[in-house]
Image (tube, rainbow, N blue to C red; front, side, top):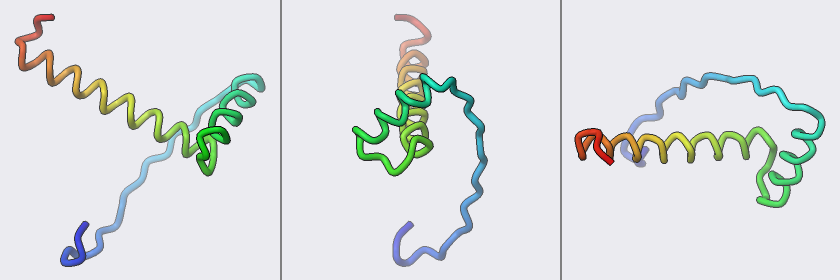
Length: 68
């Protein structure tokens, strides 16, 4: 959004993620090491990056006609 654009309300969808104690411990360590504000923030970044990579792969495949 630029300074000239009006503010728009952001619609947000929430997800619930389950983890074992060991996973939660590891995730918290990684999030802290990467200086993320929370495990949820780190998971959000990872999911967004992975989905963007997948979109890029799908777009490349479509340009090549589905051929590798």
